[in-house]
Length: 124
Image (cartoon, rainbow, N blue to C red; front, side, top):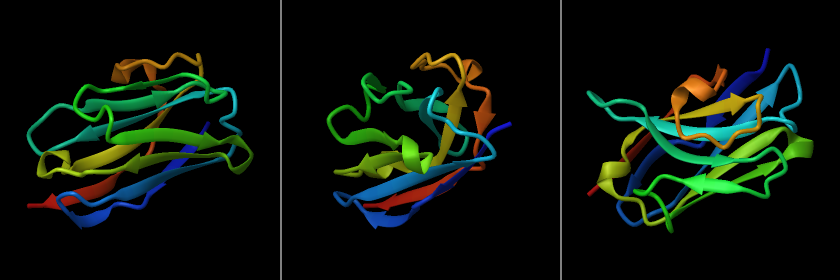
């Protein structure tokens, strides 16, 4: 079992930045692909970004390309999501997820472990 805890969410004005962290415990995530998803009220969970186990491959959702950057620090067992140029439409609960098959997938069903989420609110 992998436990994931997100942090770093909050309220920010449009155009601002936030960095989310996802700390893993109970076992190392160095062999796992990791992903970030988000879910706004009344909407389905949406793919944001994913990174391979070694960090060499990444993938982003179209709505965040060029603004968000996913990274990881395996010795610290932590994954990050740097969010720049935030927009009100980025408002959502952001979830971290782990995929033991090391596939940088965009679908929720590929991921086995999920965190509880952290709220990001972008004001206009």
